[in-house]
Image (tube, rainbow, N blue to C red; front, side, top):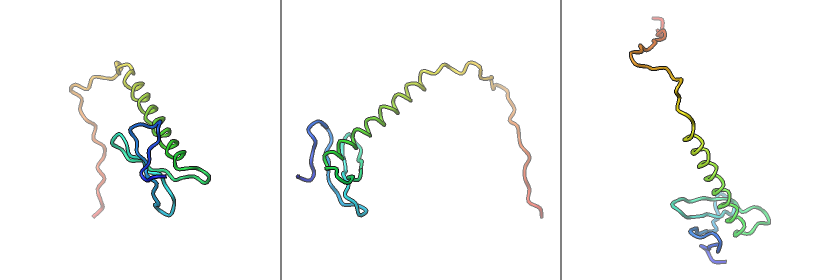
Length: 97
């Protein structure tokens, strides 16, 4: 296996096997980010790379869906008008002298 390597079905990503923090890890570079994951026992570097990109893809889709749900929330029509409101000042704690 060459280092760096690529996986045919993961276009736009390049992978590198590295020894870091006493463990073998797969490092992925692509689309402006760098990701790392340990290679699990019995797992090949290609499988670890596939797992890493799949997890990141699912995370990004979840974040986008949450963002879209937040954008589609109705306006806060019941919020009070703060025009001319006076701020409440709480008691000031003073140290004893």
